[in-house]
Image (cartoon, rainbow, N blue to C red; front, side):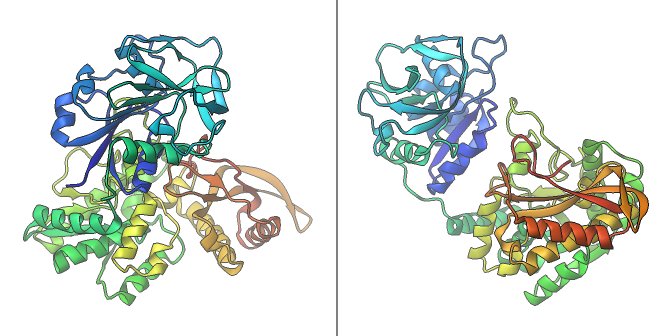
Length: 510
């Protein structure tokens, strides 16, 4: 068993970043509900707790709280923003509604030394995002940091390992935030670095073998990084008792079926291909609402897999490459986070299934899966593929999905990706794709008026898919892509470039 940090989530958009920063220190952590009881926390073997930030004011009627008994567990606790205020309130300090918000970068000063800020420079920039703030600290606590606005920015208990900060050390805007998190983990909570990609693989193989026994597993293989790495992991765990099945849902990129087959044949991994294009497209006909699309696709995928399983016989399990961001964005972890979108393999799954689901990666981020792939010697060409959504082009074809519109999208997407390869930009980008919009605009081609579709191109940098920034591709490359698409893809007369980061946008448009 690995040493464990539990993050009690109060619904902050930054909670997953806390997990990322802790994982970067090779310490295992999990995000859990904020109302988890002290008994449950103790039974899970948590060595430390982090209380996350959140969008609520602690003065709101239904503001989330914690089990007061967590402060009697005898383990280190770090409160972040809302978490600091919860801690202050519990120990009878005074939190007041802010007349003005502190939002954005601030400098911090240290009136007293603290192991939490060891190695952090005086005046170091941190990221504030709060209205309420601590006015008076509880008895037996010290002020260990103040903001440049002279508000309390950090506190610590005089005898217990309880610390709180009003800012967000997990975001990049907090310049020395990783140092602060590292200090909490190692100087205060005395963790060891015992969670690595290699140890994950060892643990996952043991767990898979224990769960499956002599049974057979159908692996839903999309050809993307996650399911592909999972195919190698499952093969190492149970050999030929894992049956990788590739479903053509009619929503794939140009030549996707052939490319996936070629990639796995080169690695001597046998895959089974089945075409369910008609089933998917008939169910999606006329559907416009994104959430409905995702749920339809999730249901039809399961129906297809169950049908294939009956044909193969002896299949009891379905393995999926579900990731932590899929789970988080589907609102499947806590009661305070909103559902951003139902991922087809999480929120899109039907309530009743004949197959038992295995998801070894459901607590990993994308970059962690790639690291696992390298441990498993997965070919670099597979590991380096850009992410592709499970619902495929259905969520890049905004509005109604039809074969005609999908054909336009495929052709344009291929031009964009080919150009990125040709110019050496493909491997510099985390994800790139095109989006067909449900609007038409006036254009002129060959001295004639046109009234055709608008297509967007999108390229982002990211580590884990939870946050992303748009890529500053050179204008001449964007111009080349635009010219090629407009001139060679019938039905498109205008190309736009998406310059929205995540947040406030998402990476995919639907």
